[in-house]
Length: 213
Image 1 (cartoon, rainbow, N blue to C red):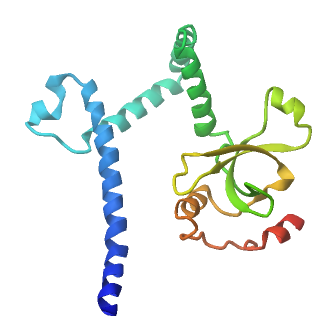
Image 2 (image 1 turned 120 degrees about the horizontal axis):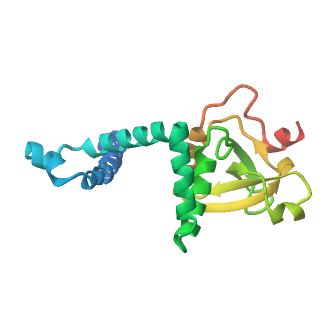
């Protein structure tokens, strides 16, 4: 019985990651394949070849993004983007949604941005309890007038779903910068601490020691 249980667990450790990976990839490819609906019916693989081609929508999405990016990178494209922003900004309701999403996307995907580029260790939800957070920037606007010290904005993701979490503004001195990549930190969070990141040189000190260093 012990051997059978051991074999079962070993089999699960091999099959479960593969099955979940395949399921996630199929879900992503299936969602991207919906972009085929923007093509005229006579141009779709079903019409041309008589059957669907899984993943063709993903290739179409990638090609579309590359074309849009190439156009938006030159002078004429930038002018068109600015003109489009002005048009959208005049549409009620739509402008508030679009402007919010655009600000977030500009911050996250900007080459010069610092959002989600650094993982830190913070005390949350109370002193003495530590968790991993990501620096998203510095407090701005009217908030900055009340926070006189050196504060940073951080995002504390939840486990195992990091898309939900908490937005905090903490003193920089209360945040311990970690010597790990964002990917390593996310894996650590999603796995609930099971998948530990590798120890880099000069890291691995206790939080109290790192704070006093």
